[in-house]
Amino acid sequence: MATQRFTKHSGAVLGVAVTMAEVLSADAILILLDGSTDWKRLRSETKETKMPILVAADTPEDLEGASEFGLIPLVLNKEKAPLLERLQHALLEAATDELIRTNGDVIAIYSGFQQGRMDSISHLQLDERMRRLTVRDLQRLESSVPLKTIKAVVDLAVQIGREGREGKAVGTLFVVGHSRRVMEHCNDGGLDPFRGANRKARNLYDRRVQEDVKEIAQMDGAFVVNSDGNIERSRQMLEVAHQDLTMSKGLGARHWAAAAISAKTKAVAVVVSQSTGTVRLYQNGELVMRIEPMDKAVKWQEFNYEPPAPTPEA
Ligand SMILES: Nc1ncnc2c1ncn2[C@@H]1O[C@H](COP(=O)(O)OP(=O)(O)OP(=O)(O)O)[C@@H](O)[C@H]1O
Image (cartoon, rainbow, N blue to C red; front, side):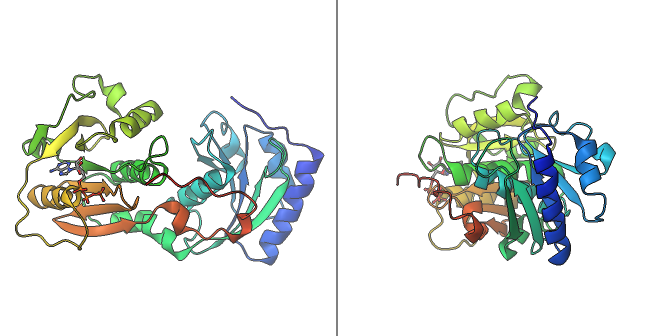
């Protein structure tokens, strides 16, 4: 578990952030940490404000004990990610959990220049388009597939769409829920590494499994995920007719297959487009949600001191 010292300097920066947040009527203060810190001291420096204080770090262990002091922990699981991405992810998590409004304001404190030292404060305004990923939007799907599982798949799909793999754009397809019915319409598209693996090695909530999925996503075919988030199959070719469906121009076989399986079964299909990184959700044969890659979905003028991530090769 990493730690970050809470110093007199941290207290002073926090004090300024609290004043800023009050003056600007922000929704919350977000503290991005490089590890666990002195929660008691952090709380005592912010006791004057009733504003929610979100503390974000990479692992649940880093955040242990924070909630006992009325702080709201946010686990990032983004150890090696650049600052911009960690901040974006923290905001997205907070918006998804409805801790902040999706078009709200947040005062963020983070180590912008020196690791382990709270040296930067920013006033962040969330973009309207982040709304696409709120729980409320997912709830509107009225699916029999648990929201938690859909959200986990969507999170992973968004990551795949944004990051690709080893500099290359990756597209893939997840069919979530009602897996037994879904498998009736599947054929192996190649050797399936998940077949026969024990449950833990197939559960999407596990970070190692997420990495495996990113690797396998480079190959042809779909992932079949059950309602609990276990991967039942990967590299599956879906055999479903799509005569009665309509689809936006320019979308190819992967998207047709996604729409068709969602029409044929009660599963939700989550597609990552290789060409654009856009994630689309299909239900009952129709497009029900579209999520642009996160980097485009948030305006970050405040952060233009950081060079943009290299664009994947075409
Ligand atoms: N029936 C299917 N079941 C599962 N995967 C499929 C199916 N059809 C196509 N795919 C996958 O989609 C890949 C790309 O197909 P295509 O380019 O036509 O899709 P697309 O919808 O245009 O998606 P993208 O935007 O990612 O290119 C194929 O290489 C294959 O891996």
